[in-house]
Length: 252
Image 1 (cartoon, one colour):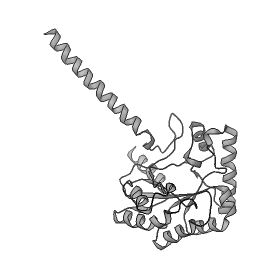
Image 2 (tube, rainbow, N blue to C red):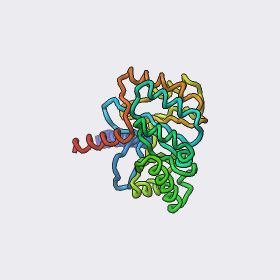
Image 3 (cartoon, rainbow, N blue to C red):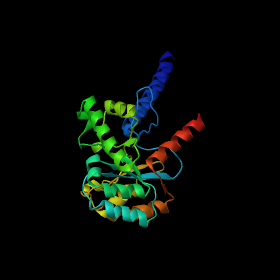
Image 4 (spheres, one colour):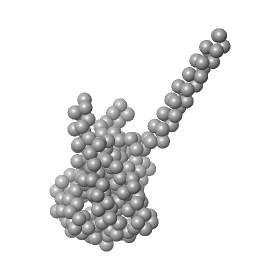
């Protein structure tokens, strides 16, 4: 009788342990997809997506060089009536293309920083990180008249130091949850599939408007049409974040 009771308990303990390990495994596998909106005990965090039931998402475009692709992309957004999107601009490119920056601003799109030098911030010391963010900040503010408060670091690279420094400087680090992989130039249909199949409420979608991405403008019309057919509304990253904060406060 003693052995039977202990065997049952042992079996229960093993089931509990297995479930716990399984849960930890899932949390670890999904660690990059967790969205955090405010600074917690472990400090500020990057935003990959927003948890919401509303069918809203943000189209984002990174630009660091070239001038041939951004024009057609802006034309398509205008033709399709997309009035809200977020562009992350590198400051050297912006300084060399003030007319395009002006068009992006005049069209009402949100402008965030894509840094100054195109280098991995995690490889820099604290002073260099701050200098890179500051330089880009000054140039973008001068060109647009509005100080940016969102930053997508070059290559999406960051560490805890970058997050803390950016936060102290009034910036939110923005990543993405859906990667169009347009930077691989995999073909128009594949880019469309990469976006449409993965898009979800609160999503932040990564695309590019640099010249190296030769197929983005070809895929964009279908992406817009298919997402709209699924009931999605296009908003800026800031609107996604603000809405999430409002919803969080309401729950509390």
